[in-house]
Length: 359
Image (tube, rainbow, N blue to C red; front, side):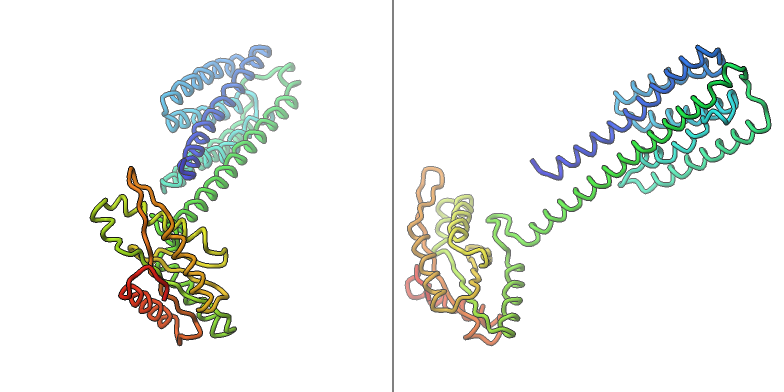
């Protein structure tokens, strides 16, 4: 399976999962707060929490239908309204205003979309709204007495402040970790995509060998090194004999099978520090490092013999093909272009003298 497809599915699954995390955390906290309000008779906040619980039940139903963005906006509005109301009902000392700050990483994480430039603008608007309500709730709680006030409630100030502080830090940490994971996954996806593009740019799609452009770069680089160090290397150009007859008689699909089998045989015979490419059509080029022409001709002869012995199967047909080789080396050339021309001229010389030979 394509790695980029798997990564895309992974990020998509995470995107859905984090909305479920968001909704689940909010639902759990409001159920817990409802129990607190019930125990300490904080009736206004208890009624508000009943509405909050119903709100997140609706959010879960929307998530099942794939409406993640609507679910988030409902949840976000509930959080800021609840934090505002709870601060006025109990006072800012209980720490409910911390949830305004928690909305910042949640908003940027849940609304961020690499493909939507407007998502950052929407996030900033929501964060600004959180700041306005946070400021207003804090100012009002300083001016006016809390709506619900009793000795029993006052004894829970420190406990509820610690619970709200811990919850705020945990939620912020969870969404920060999710953001880090998503960023890593996005970078891995980009890295793998660049690798795929690099392969497509450098390789022949049919045989998997280097393509003409990449091989030309290799030859140019090796010739530059040769001019500095005089380290020998040879160039071998080879061409399948009578390949047009294969295509004409058995079709291009058969021709593709022949090309892939030739590529496989040549690959099995080349060394790790050599370079092999499909030069074009039925023509291949081999770059032999640290080798002079006479040795290169011996190696090319092994290539020729191995290919002529190979049996290539296409459906119910068994084919045998031959190749002609032209060889040149850096010592007998004054440029990499002349190396190409010399090897190519020798290839055609072999074609004219009967094919299936090394020149």
